[in-house]
Amino acid sequence: LERVELTGQALELAEENLRTVTAQFAQGESVNTDVLTAQTRHAAARADDVKARIDILIALAGLKLSLGEDPAIGPEAFI
Image (cartoon, rainbow, N blue to C red; front, top):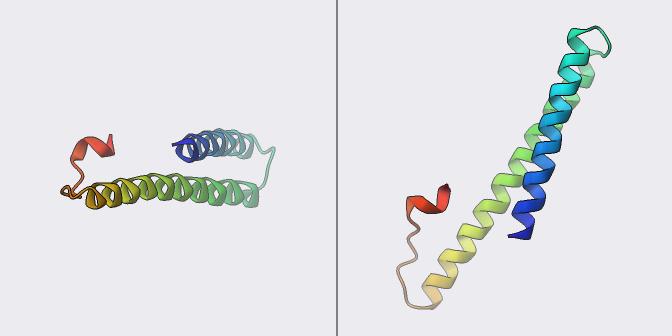
């Protein structure tokens, strides 16, 4: 769960950076490559966050399976 917290924080920072760079670009204070770099970093942070969440779900399913339980995960796990 700590990994999800860290990737969530990284995603928040990437979102804030993207907003800042986009605003700077709109004011003529940065170039389009700065925006593209921020977009790329944001997409990577989002992918890392999703991967961390998926890894938790996989681990939970594996635990349930090892306990002889149905490894299915209900929709509440995705909230």
